[in-house]
Length: 151
Image (tube, rainbow, N blue to C red; front, side, top):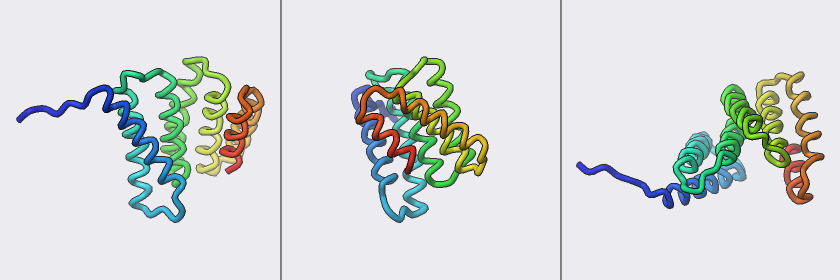
């Protein structure tokens, strides 16, 4: 039996496609339990394929962890959301990311703690996300972030 190999270019394509499929499900009204399972798998697969892409950069890992955390928060799985939010934040700190990425790392923690019904941490990270949003240079990015934060 021969082994199956996926080229770097195909990993890149699959990383993008899995990201798109995740967002399609995030935006779907009345998702089923099966949709939620697929959404989790798409987000995790996107992260995997990005790691294998020849265009991978460390910021892709940070953004991938944000998306995975977001998916878990949206479907009410707070502990998993927090686990990936913490990974996102850790990479944000390690890479000294600012602007958009810093704000979203706080937003991930905010959502995870909200999902866990931890009011103190929820409020703390919401304030941190709002403060970081003030530092976002691009006005369109800032508006997008604030819309996400308030959703």
